[in-house]
Image 1: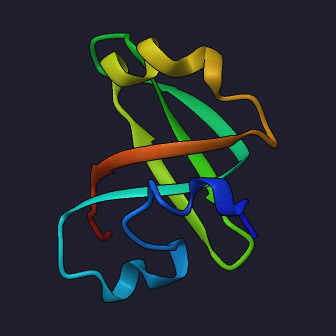
Image 2: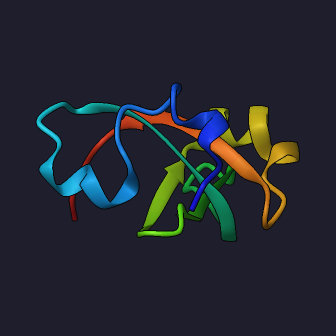
Amino acid sequence: PVRQEVASFVSCSLADLSHSTTKSVTVAGYVMSQRTLLTKKSKRMAVISLDDGHARLDCILFPDTYSRYKELLANNLVVLVQGQLGTD
């Protein structure tokens, strides 16, 4: 499981996201994988897979966010992600 040090920063675990009643969430997890994509305007964006030891979540990083944080997205590092919860 993700270290207890980040527990005070997250709004819920990845496993509890399906029960979340709020749209804005903060989660933590290990970066397990990432893939970059090009938008129609040829800007880079990414999809990263987070794992907190109990569940996995794919996060979409749109171009501005990806450009700002891409250096922090090494595999097996713990990251905090704040964003809007959506389903597909």
